Length: 116
Image (cartoon, rainbow, N blue to C red; front, top):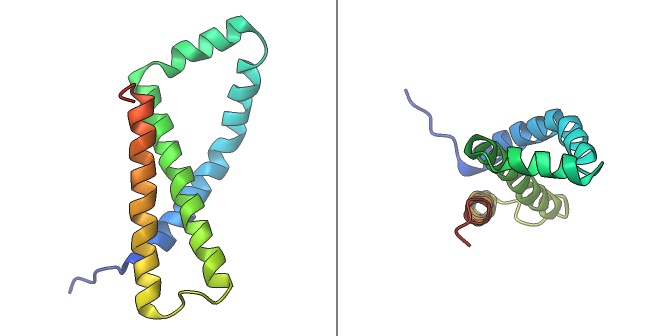
C-alpha cells in the first residue's frame, strides 16, 4: 500500500533537513566569508571559485535550503499564533511555502547564472 505524504508533512520534513544542512554548512560559509574579506587578492580568488558551474549549483542548493527554511519558519510563526491550524488551511499554507521557496530559488538561479 502506498501512502502519499500531505504537503504539510513534506514541508515539515524539508524544514528539518534544510535546517540541519544550514547548521552544518554555517561554520564553513563563515570561514569562506572571513577569508574573502582579508584582501583584494583573496576576494578575487574566491570570486574565481564561485564562477565555476559546480560551485554555483552548490550555492543554489544552499540558497534553496535557506529560502525554504525561512518560508517554513514564517509559516510556523503564524501557526504559533493560532492561525491556519485547521487541516485545509495547514495544507494550503504548506503548498504556499513550497511554491514561494521554489519561485525565490528560481530567481536566485536566474541571477546566479547571469540571466537577469
